[in-house]
Every structure is written in structure tokens, then in C-alpha cells.
Length: 185
Image (cartoon, rainbow, N blue to C red; front, side, top):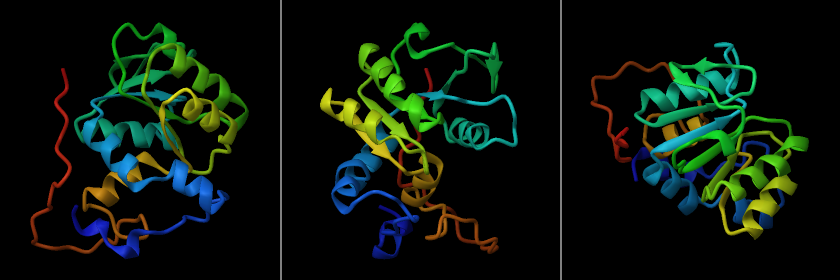
């Protein structure tokens, strides 16, 4: 799938997960499928502050063609999209929930995703979301945990250096796009 799919990309990013938890919640096949098939991503905890990671990730995903749905009870609009106070308030289907909330809030977010009939949830890098991940998995949702959706998109799309950073190399090579760009309705 692109230059990022080699063995050098099998990095753990200093994860706290056990090998078994990594197999369950960091499956390469699940990550690639979610990035390829998702069109509408609800970002729980999307910040209005451009310096925050959630804002940066939301901006990146929007630029890559995904429809971003901000979930933030203190905002009316983020990234030009109306913000919703919770997942239950979103009046249209969502393919994936990307979570930028503290671990103690993740079980509640998982319950909201289950109740809303959303089929996949992604708990961002370094969020201690094991309880939420277990609840979501038990309900049949696809779950990714302790990975960054932006970094994974770049890695599997061939646009990110193996360590997850821009190498600042200038090249005349045309960028490959192995992941199909989703159509926004």
C-alpha cells in the first residue's frame, strides 16, 4: 500500500498496551480499512484553538477530503462546520468517531457511539481509553486505540516519514495517493 507499508513502519510509538491489546486495538487491517472507507468523521473534543492537536488533526482530515463533524458542547462552529454537543445530536450518519478526550470520559463516548449506531471508534494517541475500547469492542464496533489518525493516514497513504514526522526533504517525485480520497456529500 505505498511506501509506508514496509516493516520499518511497525513501530509501537511507546505504547502502554500489551502485545495482545496491540493486536486487538492497533490492527493494520482495521486502520487501513477505516481510513479507506470512512467518509464522515465525528471528532469528539475538536478544539477551536488552532494550537491544539485536535484542531490540527481535524484540519488535516478535512484537507484530505473527509467530512469533519465537530463534537464540542462549548462551540457553535469549528473548521466551518456546525458543532454538536454530543454524538446523539448529529442528525446524519457518521462512519467513524475520533476521540480527543481524557481517558475517564472515553467509556461515556463509547456508549454514545454505540447508542448512535456508529460502527467504528478511534481513541487518539496517548489517551488511556482501555475501558472505553473494551466497551466498544464488546458491542461490535471496530476500535483503534493509542494511534493518531493523522499519522496513520499519512503513513499508509505514503506521505509521512516512518517515524511519523515530515523529513523536510525536497523532491521532484510526485506524491503517490494509494488511499482513495473520500467523496464529501
